[in-house]
Length: 374
Image 1 (tube, rainbow, N blue to C red):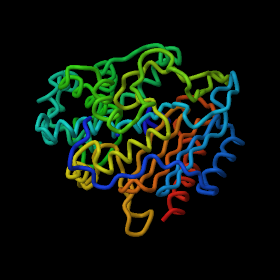
Image 2: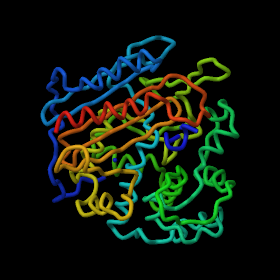
Image 3: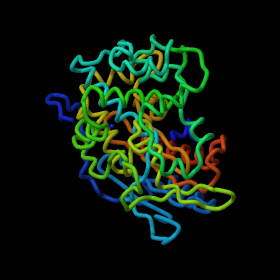
Image 4: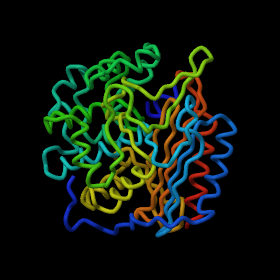
């Protein structure tokens, strides 16, 4: 339920590859480190947001805060360590695992997907030209499986029906589009489901195990996992949607359990840890990382580089969200300046196509916070 789709809506420590590591033990709270985010949290709460949680790092200064409640039933106060769906923001973690296969020569970026996953062209006949690079760069042209899923499934089904990678692809295949690839970047959750299936096939084990070994453990992400079927383990930030005008807890989402696009559950601090580990060489080699963010015409791995935030300094964006969740993380390449925010949005109908008004406001507050640290 990536926000670009559903608001319808990053192993081993590589020796010799630590090209600048931030001090992850820094815990010094600093007043007014994030006034724009504090103001956003107040406004979001006034407009019905259930919670806003953010993590800000500026060198050795760090701030971790939460406002709002964990869930509306108990009204338990939200805390910064509460876990949340980071829908879509987990795709760079999947990309890390794919790029590790590229590093050892098991997969090449320009290999046809069908060379590694024959099932792909059984489901998508005529799409033989799609490569691993196309999937990582969002140029496959594959239909996004999530909009038709939302249109056809009830909330009960979304919450209790588990889907396999194959089932998600078959949903997408029901959308009639001419075979890709395409010359433009077009986000599709289906790209990541193909990559998740490919990873499971190559490793002969579940995606959750692959990500734990390649990403979660080496990055120190102790509060991150790939969701399984059933109610996510507490403490979770509960999200809500509207059904016939009534609020409904939408924290359990079996339809995306195990999903490569949407299935990661994490915390704001763990997401910051991931981005810092990725940009400072603790997950993949420096040349691999550069090949991702310097790829032309589009960067690879669901990561957006930007040179427009602080003069002379490149930053990267990782974002996601869908349904009741919105996620934004921005980091300088050295990992010393980071802002990560999760907002549990006001309840609304799941199939509404326009972006919630609080999302651009959140993104603006994130940018103001990063720029204040330039």
